[in-house]
Image (cartoon, rainbow, N blue to C red; front, side, top):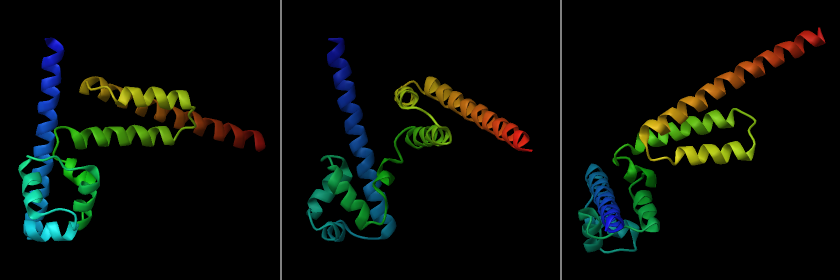
Length: 156
């Protein structure tokens, strides 16, 4: 029974995401001042009735079509996900960690561990992992700087 409820909750969450994406499509379309008919023509692969259903969250938008809709309205597909709870914050945190990792000369094992940590759904734990990555990065930069200074001293 417990697994069924979890499955049902997951389906509801997905349906809510579909609705939020539909709302972002409508929001952007209205910002541009274009009709559903015109948007359908711009994508040239759906009818205005389909656009209507996407905006209402009744029908799910495929990834390819979301890309086409974004292109037609001058936005990156990620724009449609920006209203999701915590999405922007998670992306920002992940980007910070990725930048920290790129600044280091890290082996594949460390990258795999970091990817696993970033997929943790607990926000507090994920935030903690970001802080750890930042500290590692700061320490690594300090160590590299020290090594460069020592190297310069040896050459002199």
